[in-house]
Length: 441
Image (cartoon, rainbow, N blue to C red; front, top):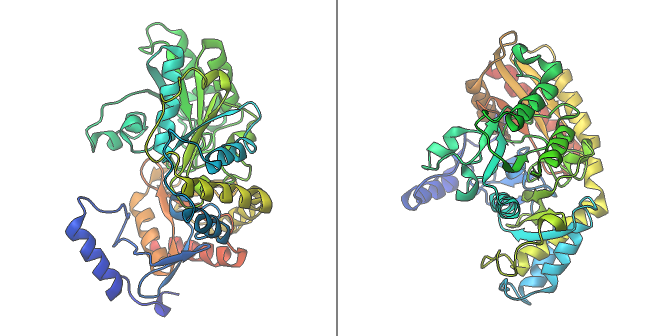
């Protein structure tokens, strides 16, 4: 495919990049090479200003869940923007109430209240503040490799210290190991014992007065880690956290911003474990491509704030909420979580059959269209290969496929395309990734 494409960036794209660098205080996160300039996008396809087409296997940070520029979202936005766009949070609109009703209709029945946000980080910040104000406690337990966003209220809760140090934010949580079966040390029971050992560490931290961890307001966890490398915890881990939270009066928060809304082959990733949290944060694809997030939770954990405690100028933006309602409508009408499960299973099988003998591939794992390819220097030592991951991304990009990097060392190739992607397009793009891994070693 590479010889059929114009070299990137072409003249129009380069001109835009140069303009950006003259005005922006920082630049976009690109991984390798020049940033992609997107002129227009539809479904799972991105097009640059010079006409080069790219298959978006990254799903634009896993946010293009129902595809780019879905016609239902386009129609909803067009209809709403001519009626009312900005609605103050001191007022109420049909779109606001309708979105909240539609969202509650697709979450576990025990979760019956909503607070709106704008970004995923915003939702996580709201959830932690709810837990702290409800319990009267300050301390929070998070997990290594976790990613909760880059806004000031949650940067200190991220499992990667570099995310804090780069912006001068102090740590704001206690951290314990997330049970990554592939990388769990033999000294702690090896892969087979990862879930039980991780829970034992949490239990010890809660029970031991010398652990350094005081009474917790919240435990916050991703049911499947996204930026951490598509890490799927062992059976029983989330249920164990639920049990420990109940026994200690701790608010259990699930971050479903990446893993939820059909991504993992269920509507919510926590459904794989049949565990319901006290608070759940949602975002990314829930807005249909516009900025929208929310916290959903049990009334017992969300009714202690007086009216006006939580507000922000654009929380009630009626256009974004109309887009969110359309996105939920598409998800439910087309049962996209089922499509994610079916197509994701075939993508996994295609990757495994194409890479089963490749010494640079340590593991291929995933649920639904949420897939990670772990790249290593040595299969025995499992030494992560960040440089190879960067090379694979660059080669795939040159051949018209966008993939993301994940993992603690950015050694994981992350595949999270729109759930609406055409299967033929997905197969061609996956073959490009397989070829890129083979040719990049």
